[in-house]
Length: 193
Image (cartoon, rainbow, N blue to C red; front, side, top):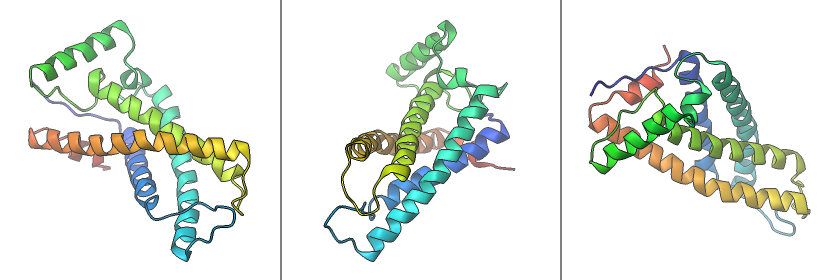
């Protein structure tokens, strides 16, 4: 099996931006605390929440730029590789699943099929987190008082976070699995030259 990992420079740059901001957001969420009416936060909880908000807005810009790039890219960064719903794309996903059943790791990298679909699903989860976070940025009361829209959005944001955490851990694990199998996916994706 020939392993090819070729992504456009723009895709690699945007992936690096998403990987950095999403990883930072997930990790900082472990020590931050959102404002709650009548509850005192430590200085660390308050500071990390403010940082989370602003890095979140940067993540929103990167996610939106990645969507724009995915819609106009002419190579394997195109939206059709992230969401392989056409007949050939579905056939490629099923062929990759068959390889997994036969205990063979399918090619990763810049192609559609199962890797593209998994990246697309992760992209959707990150998009949901970014957009609900952006809404919270503008509507969450600083004093922690309650309003229905902010509370609902906060719950949705937290619910999606579970999927982003699962995707994050799975993505890291599969990247290292590909590395162990001799696939040069990590270097190819994070080489920003």
